[in-house]
Amino acid sequence: MRARRKLTPPSAPCCPGVTHTPDASARRARRRYADQVPSTPALICSDLKVTFGDTPVLRGLTFEAPAGEVTALLGPNGAGKTTAMRVLTGLIPATSGTVTTLGMSAGHPDALARIGLMPQATGAWSGVRARELLRYLASLYAHPQSVEALAERIGIDLASSTPYRRLSGGQQQAVNLAGALVGRPDLVLLDEPTAGMDPHARRRTWALIRDLADAGVAVVLTTHAMDEAADLADHVWIMDAGRIAIDGTVADLTAESSLEDVFLAHTTEAP
Ligand SMILES: Nc1ncnc2c1ncn2[C@@H]1O[C@H](COP(=O)(O)OP(=O)(O)OP(=O)(O)O)[C@@H](O)[C@H]1O
Image 1 (spheres, rainbow, N blue to C red):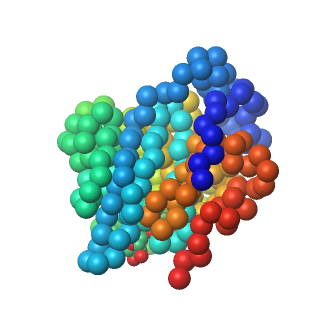
Image 2: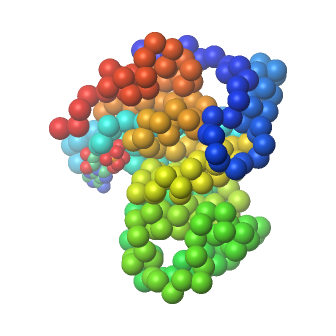
């Protein structure tokens, strides 16, 4: 089943108590609504298949993500969300299907330079401190963000001498997020960006994600938090066993029941 795609009428910002660009979400909604023209997809994923050994993990995954919007990719544990993120960034090859990122094929160096990936785990960074890591990552880009400004916005203590592996789970997530954003990407892939964050950090991250989309960045995120998807996403794609089971705007999907109920109705429990 696929919910009919519909432009969202303008509405008030939905995250009370969070400081972000005043009325930016409403402005974006008004602009889209007024134009009546969908944005050009920054990411197009078409009939993607990935098989590990004899096990099919992605079984014809098709979805897209426009610039200037937050796109949520939901699905039960093991549905293939992280696998999809890895294919989208060229980390692993697809068995078949096509991926276009920023008009280029997956893994193209010119596209990769404009993509930020926040993975679920980054064990390779274990001994390095946040400031060293972020300054190193910034040095890889032609026009990086100010590491100091980014760290302040995300709530990272650059003066800390604690190595990455000794940071709390939420602090590691914050550093991972900063690492994804330091290169001023046009397409950002965030794999469970707020997992392990406390409510303050989560709200700060939501505001940051919304500001990114308002600035024209295509944001794709995975999450198991239905409130997060409902609050943040312009469009939600729900995966089940390696393919999309249903998609639509939050308003479309939740017209008759909660997003969690829609999720439960269209997905199968992980074995
Ligand atoms: N390199 C690999 N070799 C074999 N199987 C793999 C590999 N990578 C992932 N898988 C399997 O693919 C399936 C999908 O994993 P994936 O991490 O993409 O799921 P997910 O939707 O991100 O799950 P979660 O919500 O729990 O993070 C799982 O059964 C996993 O064990």
